Image (cartoon, rainbow, N blue to C red):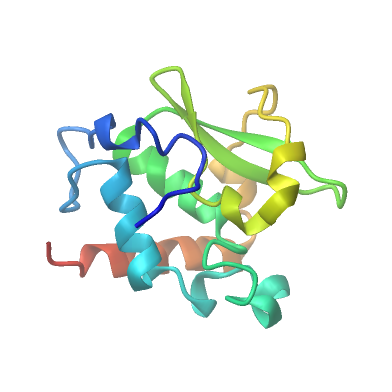
Amino acid sequence: MEYGFKGHETAGEVKPSADCEYRLDSLLDLFDVLYDGIWRAETCAPRMRDEWPAKHKTYGQCSITAFLVQDIFGGEVYGVPLPDGNFHCYNVIGGKQYDLTVEQFGNEAESLVFDDRYPQKREVHFAKQEKYERYLLLKSLLKQVRR
């Protein structure tokens, strides 16, 4: 598979924490598993589902994916402010930026500013019940993967 997400060059070196409950070898492995069928319409943000997956499988998956990455690999979650007032979420692990869902922006991804200025808190994101439920679904689907 050809990878286009931010940080893919070193994602194979990012290993899960010792107490990880998932069968994963690396952050790159997580991307493969998510892309191969875990990201789906039900895990996409409801306001974006009509366009999923025509834009990209990563479309509408950013915050729930970023917090899942944090659960497994540690690090911090940051946001890129978007024109509509929302944030696009990404991860910083070991001082390096990773954005498993940036491909949803296509050519517009080049204009996103990843400056680690806007920390994101799961309590804020998961105050929306539907988002929390999508996150739990993503976790549940990942636990079912047999590798």
